[in-house]
Amino acid sequence: MPVISFVSPKGGVGKTTSAVLLGGLLADKGAPVSMIDADPNQPVSSWAQLPGRPENLRVIRDVTQDTVMDVIEEEARRSTFVICDLEGTASLTVSYAVSRSDLVLIPLQGSHLDAAQAARAVKLVKSTEKAIGRPVPFALFFNRVSAVIQPRTFRHIRAEFETAGLPVLNCLLQEREAYRAIFSFGGTVGGLTTAQASNLGAAKDNIADFAKAVMARLRQTAVAAQ
Image (cartoon, rainbow, N blue to C red; front, side, top):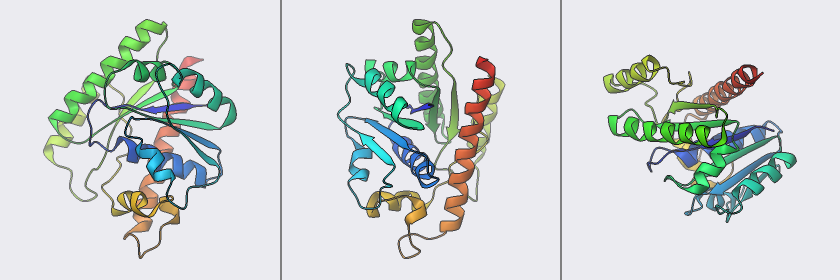
């Protein structure tokens, strides 16, 4: 079953939020999902302790560099999707998880500092490829983007990535109140009420588009592997 890892050496880019949004949507659609919380701060585990987590979404915590590969392989046998939220630094735990991933997703915001850190994440993926002797599919995606305004810096960075031949998801995850609300109220965006967050319809549509872009990338890499 597909293993999707979220990787970023920089904090504050919405790595955990993106992972929980994707895992929550897939679980809401009925798929068994395992989320591996390999961040020392364990933000996914904190979210999972709140009410509303889908019953078909498991969260595995206290993962170390000695156990991460075994945990990933075990959960891949158990669930339709495995989503790894990895710590925000280059470490053996991250490298081991990347080596077992069917897709690595690298979030960034529209700044040159984020772009530089995303480039570090790409280098980590490439070095892991050399170590294991096979390609590791990956894609960058822009996160916390304004639903109304896209600054020139953002457009410039995206153009640079595309010119360099780096894969970029064709969907942007927007800055939405609902995405913060699930870490206060628990559950998924699909379970929020209008009293808890505004513009829920737009938030749900954005997550659905993001999930479609991720699934399309997975299919693309599977075809390329064949």
